[in-house]
Image (cartoon, rainbow, N blue to C red; front, side):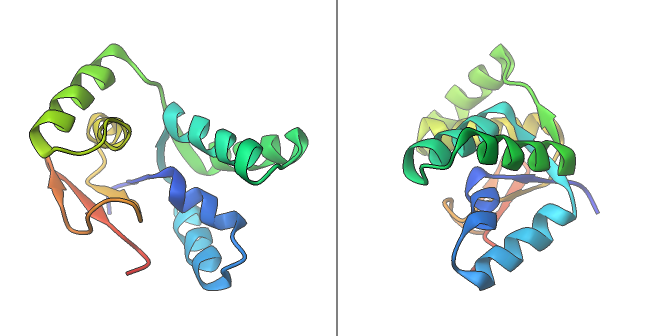
Length: 131
């Protein structure tokens, strides 16, 4: 089975009070996967701004994600691919960046709750594990 690319919303469910979703997210992350620096940035932003977590706890979450997942950088190629995806599929630029990173990582599955389940974006299939 090929590695899956994990959207930030999946990682953030590890911190959820919704036990069912938290357990599902834990199982997904335990299998490993790929994330981009954008995913790490989004996790950091939500943990700091919305969840108001102390920096030590945020760093612990990030360390756990980086230990479980391969992290790929954002590049000019990621940006250029995202622009094309946003135009072609009429999706938000943030989502297009996630899709571009997934494509460039070689993942065949993008695990996300926020995008259209089953949608094929240039060979990457979006899967919502909570549907």
